[in-house]
Length: 199
Ligand code: ATP
Image 1 (cartoon, rainbow, N blue to C red):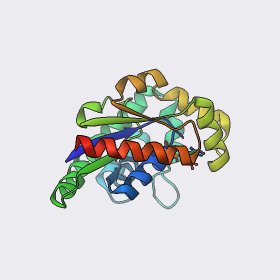
Image 2 (cartoon, rainbow, N blue to C red):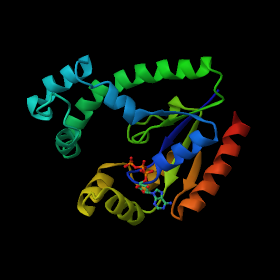
Image 3 (spheres, helix red, strand yellow):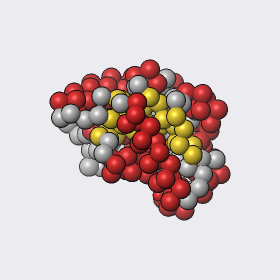
């Protein structure tokens, strides 16, 4: 079973690529979804986050206020590291479980969508690292248009993440998403062939 780490900066098109790969037959594991799961109300993970950051990171309903927590950690590397130290081991454990399940079900290619793969130096965990790449300006425009996020906020996220050079240096394969959705589909079809060949 081939394990693929799929990454890219905010708005690069990771979700678009992983949805397409899933359609083609890949088993997709979404690291963000797991990261949410391990801090659901009632989890040990959430209790530790509250201990570290205080009740101010909870919504009135007692869920994690991700926007509030994001404001705190994206402005402070040390606090981001402390959050990661709580969340990452739990994500790792859950990922291993899901990977085992995929293996048992006979999957040939498992794709992990891991937004911060390069930032957290996780490339060695996967057989192949695939980077989705698009120019910063394109990403800002797409995220602003589709999600209504203020441009300056998208730029702030981009500055807090690894730069393009660092990401490309970590890549075994690159998917160029600077063009249309149709062009992206065609590139993902090529990527899928390559992954099957490597599997
Ligand atoms: P994030 O890191 O923020 O989760 P992502 O890398 O998963 O982002 P997507 O959500 O797949 O990125 O894409 C960002 C936005 O750009 C989405 O609204 C998506 O619909 C749009 N998009 C992706 N690819 C293209 C494309 N080739 N042309 C136009 N819009 C695109």
